[in-house]
Length: 592
Ligand code: 9MR
Image (tube, rainbow, N blue to C red):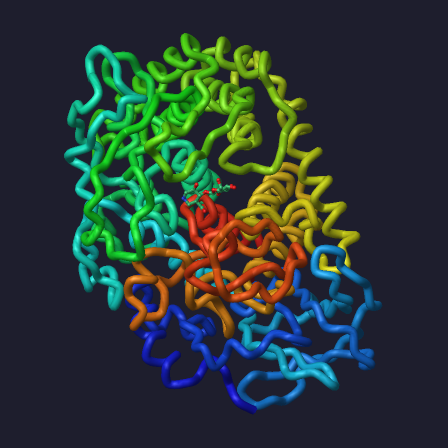
């Protein structure tokens, strides 16, 4: 039987990928990750869909099988082809978002580590996958390492970036104050310096709103699973400096964010941007003038929230970063004060600026989130009451919907809050959402919480943010269904997906080769930078791709092409929940 992960192209690039991900070969001996090749891309139709990276020994293990005559499926050893286990296929059911009729294969009972495939009579064998306690170590490390690859203002050297080394781009030490951002102390054209930070996505701009939820999610991963991240070394320049890599990486962006606050009044600029998007060039080839544009209430509140959170996270690291925790809390308070005085400054794109908007007119959730983080860090009851005054309905997190983030932080810190806090209310908010997703998962023919309306721009991240909420429910109440439902969401983005793709570059037997990501597009001789989650299918169009999309169906409308920024872009706010969920499942699923 041919092994799709063992072609020469794969082997050559797998070594580079492992180096770039900061992982020794030994650490990865159980994982089938590696760059895919175009010749593998013909698989898909009528294929068994499963997590192409793998499963945890004690975790739930599901596959979606096309509706064929067979009644059973076999788990076979990937090396010998020998059958090790057989189980019954579930009944055929149609899943609305893809219009596929599938039968579920549940092999959760199989816990023996190894490398396997699934076989069903009448179908091609599945992609290979592992069952291993460290099944997600590599994908988690690569997902975090992506942030290093997307750093502005720094050269990526070969010892950390492997084949994807590149010169520095965007020093951002000569940034102009745009007319929309002018203030008495900083009139239009004033030059400021705001280096570092991560490029938002496939473009080279830096946006505070999207940085907010991204930083939050990575800091929450650290707050919730410190043991997992303490043990990690992803091979970034700061590795080994006394801070865990996840915090070093987040600090790269937080330092930029601090420079986005106007020292005169505490307001925060919405974005640091070119006036228009660059072409497909490397960062150092981009020559556009850079601007800070408009101070907004959303940016200022998101800034206030993550600075309050970062302040408490960094407090124990005073020796490594003296004074930083205190400085962040002061910055957070000033931002909060600005937002109180300017409660409704909505982002309006100036006529001469054409980059991403991240404009959101509903700010109750931003106020609630900032208040919650400030309350936890300061223990000042005034912030609890401020949050309760605006508390919006809890929704799946996203850049424009951040209310849940505050509830998650409150739930995590519930034992250290002041008596003013209503812990029952906090737990109830989380459980209501997690219970809803678990119910959807349980009744889904595909065994995922995703429904037709969830297939929006960045649908893969919607699945992972649903998982993030399910994980909070599990952490609070221990309901195993919630952990299994979260596992299903990770399976979904790693290959139990109606497109047949594992949606993370460089992982699985079939993964995106042409993400909308300028550095990857400008280095066509290389596989894409590894560890990037692409946005995923959704039926709304708007890009200028000439190639036809294979389907218009919500869960299948996806094109692995550079032009498809609507379905194949990558973004910091999408990778962050991949880091969170892959770490959480590794930490929470008991492995002997
Ligand atoms: O993720 C954003 C999505 O929710 C919006 O619908 C879309 C259109 O406004 O923009 C997405 O964000 C993009 C941002 O504006 C610019 N950088 C790339 C982001 C991902 O596509």
